[in-house]
Amino acid sequence: MKKIYAALMAGLLGTAALMGQAKQPQPKSQKEVEALMAIQNATTPDAKIEAVDKLLVNFADTQFKAMALLIATQSAQQKNDFEKMVIYGERTLEADPNNYYAMLMLAGGYALRTREFDLDKEEKLAKSDGYANKAMEVLKTAEKPNPQVTDEQWVATKKDLNSQAHEALANALMVRKKYDAAIAEFKIAVDSAATPEPATIARLANAYHEAGKYDLAISTAERVIGQADAHPQVKQVALQVKAKATAAKNKAAGTPPAAPAKPAAVAEKP
Image (cartoon, rainbow, N blue to C red; front, side, top):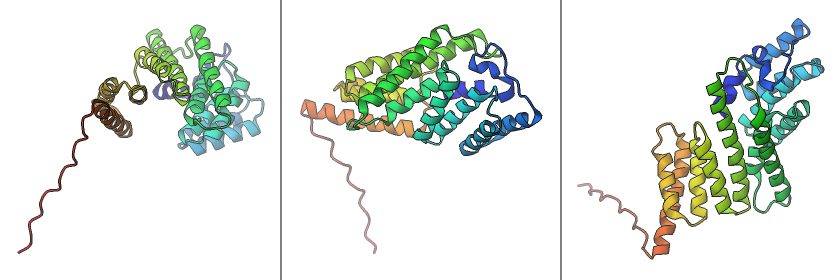
């Protein structure tokens, strides 16, 4: 989704159709153009958020409101500021109720940030489920958002976006410890994506481990480990899952754990 989002967001003033608007929004003055260009030219998440805030303060009636808020939502996500991402994401949906990008960021954020013993666990997971399901519903009839995107690219994009929704549903099920249901959703997320994310595959491996399906956990983790384009941190997670699943499998079979390797002997100084 990140690559898709970046491609579609390229050129703020030239991609108004991204938001699914029938009529392309227009800036009302040169000052508004400059404010929009400040968002586009900002090089850090904090700078983008600051530029969005300035646009909305100085041009409250801007036709680019939903687009700018979406950029702020993604920028908050990039800097791992969940609370701010929720604020901007919900404001995006107030401006554009069918914005599936904002829905997917919120769905994923709530699912990953909710913990087993949170007092409001079910409330947050319900929000995650709701955003994920609504995004999939909107995507069923969503039109190609940018004329420069080919039909083939749009089909692939919708597959990856739907994959994100299924992954959010799976992550919420993991918090609920409904591992078999989570596995089913993770498998849909992986199998239906045009470009499966290694991190999603690693999460599927972990779900297999939690469900006690150790062979599948090991083979799925090895799939990530063998991917040349997988991020080193994702590979590290996969290695950890493989190690846990291997240990659990050996324990279940009554096989003693492998003895740690002895350090090489060090020659004494004469």
